[in-house]
Amino acid sequence: MSCQMVYPRNFTFSLQIDLDTIEVSNLNRQFLFRKCHVGQSKAHVARDAVLKFRPNINITSYHANVKDAQFNVEFFKQFNVVLNGLDNLDARRHVNRLCLAAEVPLVESGTTGFLGQVTVHVKGKTECYECQPKPVPKSYPVCTITSTPSKFVHCIVWAKDLLFAKLFGDKNQDNDLNVHSSESGASKSNVFERSKDEDLDQYARRIYDHVFGYNIELALENEETWKNRRRPNPVYIRDALPEEDSRQNGSSHDCSNEQEEPSAMVSLGFRNPQEIWNLADNSRVLLKALRLFFEKREKEIGNLIFDKDDQLAVEFVTAAANIRASSFGIPLHSLFEAKGVAGNIVHAVATTNAIIAGLIVIEAIKVLQGDYKKYRMTYCLEHPSRKMLLMPVEPFEPNKSCYVCSETPLLLDVNTKTTKLREVIDKIIKSKLGMNLPLVMIGHTLVFEDGDGLEEDEAANYALNLEKVLAELPAPVINGTKLTVEDFQQELSCSINIKHREEFDEEKEPDGMVLSGWSAPVEKQVTSNGGASSSGAPDTDGNPEDISTKPGMKRKLDEVLDSKEKFDASSTSSAQVVDDDDDDDMVMLDEDPKLAKKKRLQ
Image (cartoon, rainbow, N blue to C red; front, side):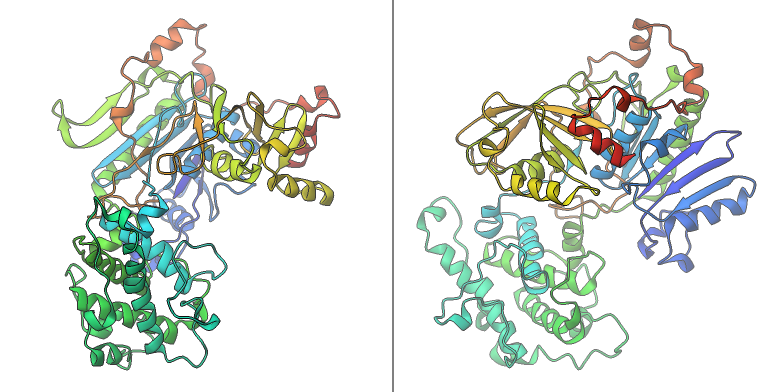
């Protein structure tokens, strides 16, 4: 993930921000890195590599998160152009908003396999990055994951986000996995709790029988669910493995080197990650992986989060997903395929990255020269279209319904009598609108504010408001109420009109509220070959936009500019914004609650 800024005083100064460290998998497509750099900061190594062949330029590198407070609007204003190569939607939206606020042109880019794109975004002249919907990972209803999976990806999500998290993650975190056993007695009320004197093999078999056997039998009791669905088959350890095999499988004495990363595959003699294991082999891998976690990594249990680069975690999730898939009649997959789905991996192609990198430079030069009529959004295609693999498109005008750059009011359907303010902030304001430190006002009443620097009594009042339903806030939210939501870090403000609604479809509207008037993300279809996945950010160099989503009837950039006042090209040739004094606080009323927030951020 990388974000670069350029200050073109003779093109001698640039800055790079990147939080990532170099991994082995980066070496086949990121040409500045070598094997000796693995584990080091991408930003620092890239800087050193470039200075070897261009020693006279000045590059400042930051091993940091571009969303850190130090990289604020004033920081962005010192640059003439920003070049984005980020790997997640949240960070891209954040940089887009800072560029709009700082009035700095943004050259956005991304690649996925053979696909890629480079787009140029200039405030008031072209659409911003958020004017069009962007693809996001598809999500699934909890009931599908826990009760009625029909695709392998459903089994992966169950194994990764429920079973793995329950066994090895935070024990206090909410989890929809059934934990209640059929046995009586308080000691067995939670089957995932292991007593100190319980044999590890016995514990592993009990977990296996509970999640793949008892839980399935429990689901089968609801006859209504299976009227039009294939009934699953409960799987118990005695069915998958002979008794002596299941007991002997736990031994890990065959781990030859104590210094090596523990691996269930290696211990069992499996070498080919593209081989599809049968039910018995998956059961052996699952039991072995569980034992290795407790024997080799016991100190980490309780704090583990699934990581696609954690070999043992991938082995466990693959085996668990395959056993569940076997129960529901879903085709089994290899570890290679399962890792692609679980880790959201779309394998990068070096030539695509090289092409996109060249196009980024070309567009950056146009921006620095103020050559706006030659701006292009260029798409790299996997298959020729009109005999071209590179498809240049003239930029479009800003989307008048974009809440980010056009400040169009949004509409929120919500049950104001049952929905808490916390739900609106988490599910709508932070998740969908991408605000980091939101401020929420109802009329002139400030009901919530996030960020450092709050007085203790203020923070306490806002915490109380979070747990109140909307209709019971100090300024009640009812049908027709208008919310004003701001994020001073991003210098973004928008209005949300409230429409009270009593009922919502749990399947189609799982949030219990519906936001209208924004560019809703387009859900990606999930494939089992590593093409995409169910959750999390993709392990790619940024998702390219779907060119098919571009409206064909929008006016081109030069048409827009010709219809406005004469465009001053010299203002674009140096995109650095003159640092004018911010006198907004001089005209704001002292009682305006937004003033204190703005002063704190300054």
